[in-house]
Image 1: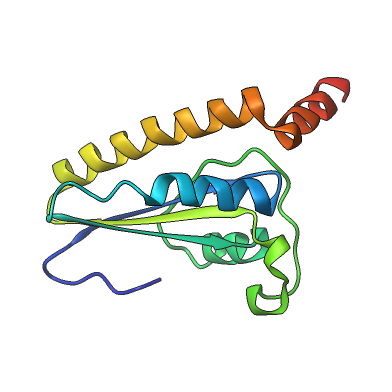
Image 2: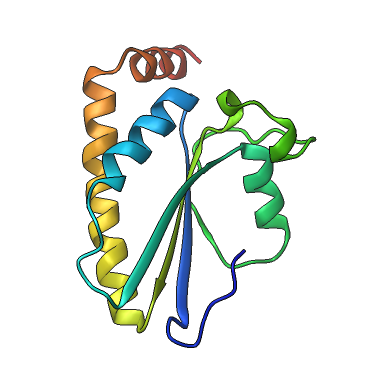
Length: 135
């Protein structure tokens, strides 16, 4: 995890697993277009594998995981093809906890819209939902 500078002492990492790399990449592209409105907040996006996500969690760092799937074990992110990177990781840094909270709330609202559109219109999400219902 990147070091937090004195100018941005408050931080949060949100990792959201998605069913496929294509959906994770689509979510990343949809959310990236909106720049942070405040210069008091920095945000970065990346796609990582469930393996790297699990490894980060086991390092004892404080992160928020919105998890809905199984996490696989073994290997490293560098060994995996892009198709294995199905976790959208968003890192926030802010000058105050209030600015962090406001930014994260906006992000979660946007993420809710993206997931809602995927659920209604995307074939992969519909297939995943159908599998969950049958189980």
